[in-house]
Image (cartoon, rainbow, N blue to C red):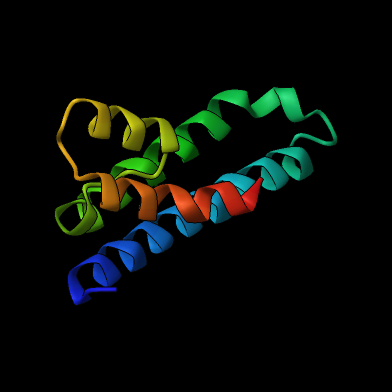
Length: 98
């Protein structure tokens, strides 16, 4: 694995970790603050997800492109924005989670 793809994969890991950590944390916090009604703070949960995506794309997007969603990676690969090897490397870890 080249040094460049290693940096890209670390950036993708950090961004995805932050998205899952903050996203799940916002759901738990909304459930606790809402007194057990998770639907009460749906807007807060959506804003937390959107905010962390914006921050992570700004923070590591220049390294890896900010492909925190496999659909973004497939779209970029289909349109020729990234190479097939990079797309396979980005999609590999995302398939392990599910």
